[in-house]
Length: 248
Image 1 (tube, rainbow, N blue to C red):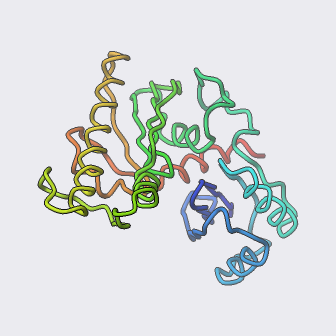
Image 2 (cartoon, one colour; image 1 turned 90 degrees about the horizontal axis):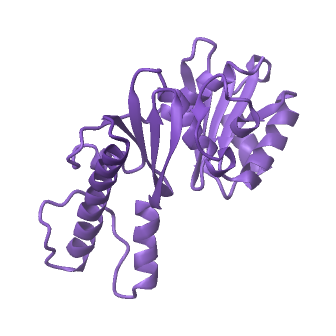
């Protein structure tokens, strides 16, 4: 059994994965508030057996949270807790950009999909909205745009008369009150941003791509953009499964 995890700016997702690559447990908690007591409670609640764990691997964009989890798991399981960026990934993927400048979750997602035949654009609705470009076996780079939830919260925090709202699909473009106007701006604004960035990637590279979307708002946008896209919510964990084979 392996412990594989994705430490994001907002949430940490931790999975228990069997040797035949089946996900048996999924645990999610807030990244910034994690501590030893919380981790102890989570592991006891989920009845994770100490003697069954053989490998531990994380991708992380929050060094402080990884440090806390690393110390906890290393002590609890008497195993080294690996981080994706510390491994030699050259046998799995070519990286055309400065490796230090790319989040390990984004590299992990690219490795998850890479098949040496197809080109992919990976759209991840996380704290930031990211686009990553994978051309066959090479990670070419990407685009980072403001996250949908972060932008919504910032707007309501800074504009006194705009309330907190939940974003949902809206058919009309012109709003008839503050809430519908904000929903329209974010829904149609992000739909347009997505389609335009994908169009520009295709124009710049002169290649065709399969588009994969993941993350919190992927359900909302998967059928609301002009671009044909497939949803994959386990892309990061599947990438970690591939990378875990490097750990002997």
